Length: 147
Image (cartoon, rainbow, N blue to C red; front, side, top):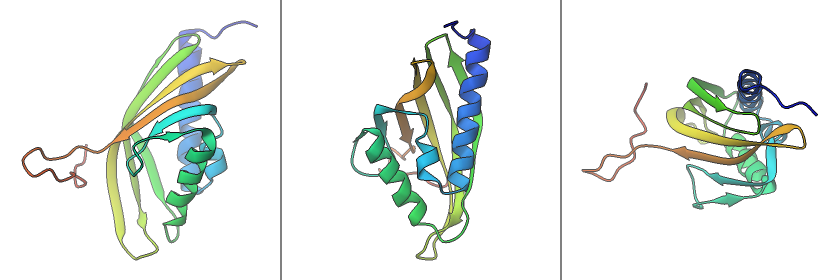
């Protein structure tokens, strides 16, 4: 099997991330984790500190989507991809909008990084990390930041 060039690998990672954006907009948890490794480790914005395994990440996605009433807006800005032939990572600013089932309007930005490894010829997310900055003086999360 021929290995991808770094340029082709970057394009493949960008395509995966675009499919993930579409999966969030469609509230499709199965598609959201369609490129995850079975043993993925995820550091999400919500408790617990760590999710382990694709099933746990899919369940977390289902929980996220089920909390919204109607459509969700979702985008990734400033996506940076660093790719070689068998390992890659990307990071960017993620933005979600919508209305929760409780009627709360959401317009939130956070930082996220995904780590990829080529497994059996396909890119798999093996690590992902999301974070929200906080104000050191107050200890409060800064949900109102924008790029």
